[in-house]
Image (cartoon, rainbow, N blue to C red; front, side, top):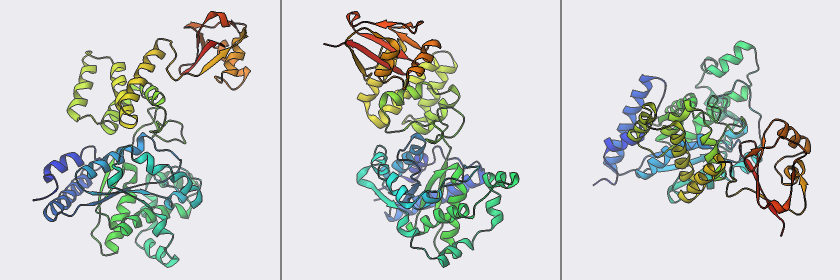
Length: 411
C-alpha cells in the first residue's frame, strides 16, 4: 500500500498555476512529472524537490512565497523538500530579469543576508520536513577545469538568444562573462543534489533547463522543471522586488501588509488571488464573478484578500487586528499601533509632527500642511500656526494616508 495519495490527485494539486509560456514544454513536463509520481507511488520513494533563493536582501517577500507554497504542497504529499539558499550564486546575481549587470556581493555578504531566510521560510514550509542547504557547499569546491567542463555544454549563441542579453547586446551595453556562469552554477545545483523536480519562476526557465542538460551530461536522469508566473509588485507593473520598492515582505507588520494589499491596483487582484492565497480556484472564480456582476465591490474583495494574506503569514488574530485598524484608518481614526506623543504644554503642530517622529524635518512638516496632507481629528489643517493644547484631551493627527500620531496630555 503506497504512502502517497493517488497520482491523479497529486497531479491536480501540483500542476495548478504551472506556466511555461509554451504548450509543448507544458505537455512534456506534465508527462514527465506524472511518470515520476507513478514511480514514487509504486516504489514508496519520495521525490527530491527543491527551489533556490538568492539572498539579495535579508527579507523574503510575497513573490518568493509562490514557489515556497508549491514546495509545501510537495511536502504535504509526502515528498522530500530542500530550501536551497544560493550563497554562491548570490555572489553573481541572477541576470534573468535584468537589462543591466547586478552588483556583485561577497560570500560573507550573502551568508549574512541568508541568516534570516530559513526562519522566514518556515512561515510557509514545514520546519520538521524541510532541508536547508547552501550552494557554496559544492560550488566553491569546483576547479577551473570543472567550470570549463560545465561551460562546454553551452554556446554563446544560446545565451545571447535570451531576451535580457539580446536587448543589451543590441544596445551595445556590457554583458559580463561572469553573468553567463550563473546558469551553469544553478544547473550544477541540480547535479549536486540529484534532483527529481526543481521549482522556479517563468523567468528561470533557461536556468532550470540548464540543470536538465548538465544532469544528462553527468549520466543522470534530467529533472522535471515546474515554473510559475511572476508576481507583480505593489505598482501593478514591475515584478515584486525590494530593490524596486514595490514589495510586500512576509515579515512586515500585519497592518503594513494589510494596507499594501488594499492599495494594490485592480488589474493584479486575480493574479494575487491565484498565486498567493489558500483559496481554491472555484472560490476565486466565484468571488471575481460577484465583483463583475456588481454583487460585491472591489474594495470588499481587497479586504478579503488582505485578511487572507496576513492570516497566512501572521495568523488570524493579527489579520483581524489589521482589518480593524484598516477600518479605523479609513474613518480617520488612529490604528491600534499608532505611536503616542505626550503633550505637556501648548505646541505648534509642525513641532508636534517633528518631535512625534512623523516627519524628519520641520520643512517636511511645513510642506505637508501646505499640501493639505495633515488632518487633526479628521479635519484638514490649513494653518502652519495651528496650536495643540493639552487640555483638548486626546487628539489624532494623520499625515498622508498611513501615518498617525495619538497626542495625549502628559499626566
